[in-house]
Amino acid sequence: MRRAYLGTALGMLLLAGCKHQPPKPTPDAIRPTVTRAILHLKRPFDIDAHGDVVIPRQAITHRSGMPGVFVLSVHGRARFRLIKVGTVTAGRAEILSGLSGDEILVLPPFRGIYNGSPVQTSGQPQK
Image (cartoon, rainbow, N blue to C red):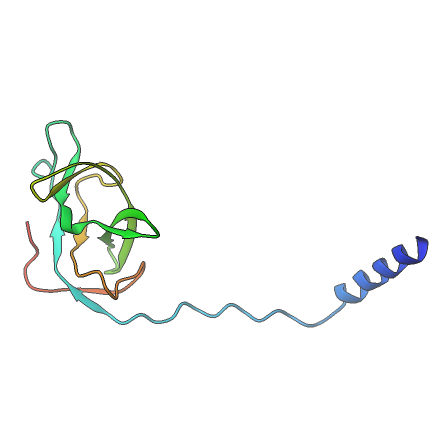
């Protein structure tokens, strides 16, 4: 028993003095810029009578089974944001949580867009 303890302690001391360093993590892969249409949400036009944000249903996508939207950051990158969807009627969806009503949404197609993808806007933004 005592030998096992001494062996373990000796092994830990040898490892502690080891100059081997683990490899540094590689930076995120450079993602290609995608060109997509965007939608400016504006208060009070995109807010319903209950105070919930209303967006086009097509702006909603699912990642890992969770509903969300891609919001355009101030740095021009798409950021996936989880949302809670309420009533869906006539091609519009009520968003119960996740949006405040003053964001810029990236519109489909969503193929090739990932969290952090650079986005170039195409044409005039939809209102």
